[in-house]
Length: 115
Image: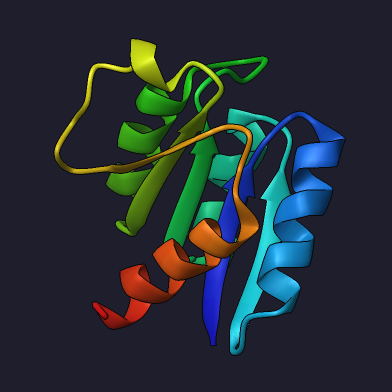
């Protein structure tokens, strides 16, 4: 089972990701609204993939990525409506909003299998 931690404070975006992951096997999605909640879930659940919104209420996705990976390393995908403003870090993958469900599913499969 592959566990994905999705950190997003916008409920419609969480619902979209839940629908995407529901069609993938054997993936499980857990969600957090804030960086603090994400850190707690990362320690408890030890996910294999982090998907982090860049703009969160209590932190930014890049800072959170570093904190989460220090707690428990995992493949990390940064998501933003402002993807062109991101200073890319080669350690992370990036997705632009609005999310394309087929592309997100493809990225998740590739992240786990390498294919």
